[in-house]
Each structure stands twice: as structure tokens, then as C-alpha cells.
Length: 244
Ligand SMILES: Nc1ncnc2c1ncn2[C@@H]1O[C@H](COP(=O)(O)OP(=O)(O)OP(=O)(O)O)[C@@H](O)[C@H]1O
Image 1 (tube, rainbow, N blue to C red):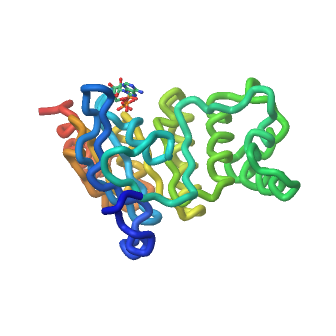
Image 2 (tube, rainbow, N blue to C red):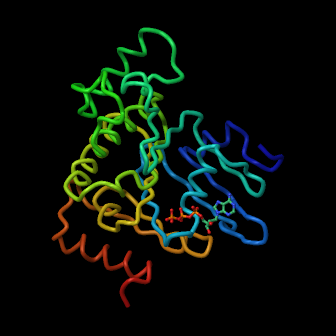
């Protein structure tokens, strides 16, 4: 932490799962994220939208600790997990061994099996990643993320490569897991309907800043045909420059 950052006690007092202050990220001469501020409450589900190249993954990488923070300050829980668009399972390890990677001891096998059952993969514990469907592989990736009991779960377009029906099933699974595991979620998506179906709040990243923030105060499960859902969709599409 830098000298002017919050102390650990102050951060905890602030009651946030994530606190980003004045974060700037440049690559050479180009500023991708500019003086960005963001709080995410414990257990909050936040969707992050923005055009390709707007810096969504850059923000996620910084939050995951996969990038250095040179300008500004990022406070986050120590238990953080990320699921990417590609499952990133190791092909030479079976599903259970992929989930327990980095954890030693028999108890982790039992833990992995329980989580694999929870994500609907209890019948593929010994399967090789190459034999899994796209949806199954993402279920395994979710199990690998959850075994760490993250306080912040970050999902970087996790269902973008899946067919529409599988995607809807996975969205429902994520909502169930989120409720059970009591973690904050940051979901990067290009899909406005996905953001509106899942999140408490949607953010639109544009020219390095969060330009639009939309609260989604609708009870779940949400209906796309609900006029309130449609009104929020219009707002987000407008913020993304898709409608006038
Ligand atoms: N290591 C790097 N070096 C130089 N430029 C980079 C680096 N990483 C990302 N960028 C640039 O930063 C910009 C933002 O990239 P980023 O991947 O965060 O966008 P994104 O919003 O996640 O895009 P997409 O929706 O297409 O995944 C892009 O122009 C990208 O080329």
C-alpha cells in the first residue's frame, strides 16, 4: 500500500469487498484507465460492460493482482478467484485434479468433489478436460474458482463462447452459486441482457472511466419481457451507443 492509502482497519471499516481509488493504467503513451474509482459491497453482484478495448480485462487483471498498480490504489480481499472465457484447465489432469491444483491433502479431494457436484459435474469427476463440452468445462472452471472460497469472484466473459441455451443454464448456475457462496461478483460481459438478468448494478466503461452506472432493483428471477427490464435495457444500450 502507498503512504496515502487506507489502513487495513479503515478499509474494513469502509465495509467494501473492493475499493478502487484514482486508478490509472497506461500502456506506453496510451491511457487505458483514467483516475477510476469503484466500490463493490460484500456480496454485491456487479456487471461491467464496455466496448471492445475499453479496458474491462485490464481492470480485472489489476483487481486479480495479475498486474502492478502504479497509479492509484486497489484494496480487495485476499481470497479472489477469476474465471476466464477459456476454461484454462490443464489437459493432462482430470477434472478433480484441476480443481484441487495448488491444494495438497485428501480433504481437498472431498471438497472438490462436493463443489463439482454442486456445479453439476458430479458424474465427470475423473474425466479429462478434452472430453468435456464447453458448458461442462466452464462448470469445472467455476468449481476451481470456488474451492478457494473467494470473497470476490471475477468472471471475464465466461459464457461468451457457449450456445444460447447453455448460456442461460450457466447464468442460472452462477446466480445459485453466488447466493450459496456469499461472495461479491464482478462479471465482465458484452451481453446487456446477461448483465440485467444477473447483476445488482451495471457499469459501463468508456474512454477509461465508468461513465454510466445503473442500479437493477428487480427481483430475481427476472423476466426479459418485464417493462422495467426493458427500460433498463434501453438505458444500457443507449450508454453503449447502440440506440439513440
Ligand atoms: N500488456 C499490454 N500492452 C499494451 N497494450 C495493452 C496490454 N494489455 C491491454 N492492452 C490494450 O489495452 C486496451 C484495453 O484492453 P482490454 O483487454 O482491457 O479491453 P477489453 O475491454 O477487455 O476488451 P474486450 O472486450 O475485447 O475483451 C486495448 O487497446 C489493448 O490492446
